Length: 270
Image (cartoon, rainbow, N blue to C red; front, side, top):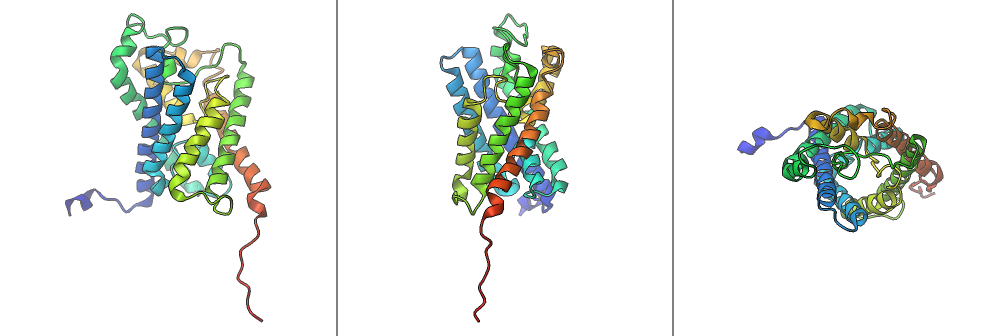
């Protein structure tokens, strides 16, 4: 069949394609929710935003989970690799796919909402403030939250996220059916992370989801201010902190739960 000409048997390429599409889905849907809420000034923005991102992650995992595991997040990749659930040799192409997919997601969101974005403030692209539209694409700190607070916030949030992901995928724990894993992880992202840890810096949690769209806004006309907020001390927080938190959360689960299951063995009759 002709479609076989487009088929690859290379495992790394299959994983790369899956993570690219999954992360694209997550970011495009999530950023579009941000755009719809921010540009329409909808009441209940926090609830709508959290629901949107939770469902976006669920959809993304359903799309690519069967091939790549549906990480769609470099912090998840690092967290799982740190406890031996992913080979370290896979990390580079997972990262490349995730950052590429997130960038493409930002591009498509911008194309869909370009008229509303440009008309929201007299065609002036503002980064922060009442009419700031860069928040559609990337996160920015609460004016009352310090950089240290934001850093700790993202370590704790990411630790909880990976703690729960490890619990959900642990077949010896509550035996979550494979088909419900995306729903469980999406609900985790929705309830624990975005609802609980969204105040200080809008709950980025995902380095690719934050950095790639931030790079896009730099290119698309928002200017250097997307990186220079808080004298360049903030933009690295959503990149670095989630990786630390993900490793911590994964190791906490392994040390407190996973290492202590009874070993499976076959008793040999005497």
